[in-house]
Length: 230
Image 1 (cartoon, helix red, strand yellow):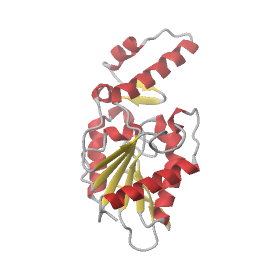
Image 2 (tube, rainbow, N blue to C red):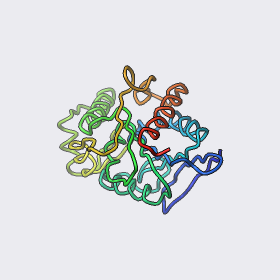
Image 3 (cartoon, rainbow, N blue to C red):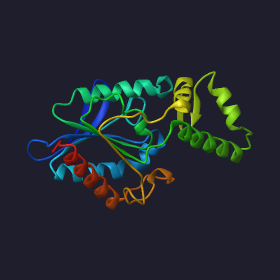
Image 4 (tube, one colour):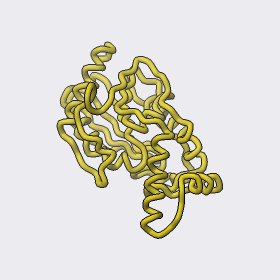
């Protein structure tokens, strides 16, 4: 198993390779914004499990996120969609795109052999969560704001939500975004009938769930066989 960091153009990518030729490459699309930080450790554990099973696994930074030098306040969802599509297009061999939560909103442009989605969430629901967190933080600081007033402010310039300065285009895009149909697709929930584990994206701090990571890896590997990819 080989772990390496890759910098293509300006964005960082974590890649874990198996011993020998990969059966396929799994490109993980993490949840968006702070949810990405809370789930990263578990996704990396899943990548290691996939590499042990003969897959290459890739976790790219999106423009404006994590180690990216791009200013987030100039990014929108469509740019993320195109960036992910370019990453997938540069990979030799067969590819499965594995998206989590808000990552499912930006994976449809990628020319993959299959898609796997965990706990997809609509953009409007994700945006409401961010706005409510800002209203609560403002209240504790003695500042009176509301969802409506924040959205009005966002129409005129970047809005700070959960430590992220989001552009008007990003906020407008989130408000209307839904996961788009792709084929072949496996879309599963977290919990009963899906992947057993904890909703890491709800935690206040980053954490990890090793059993959940193993379940993610096993389910993706099984899906790849169902699709005739490995």
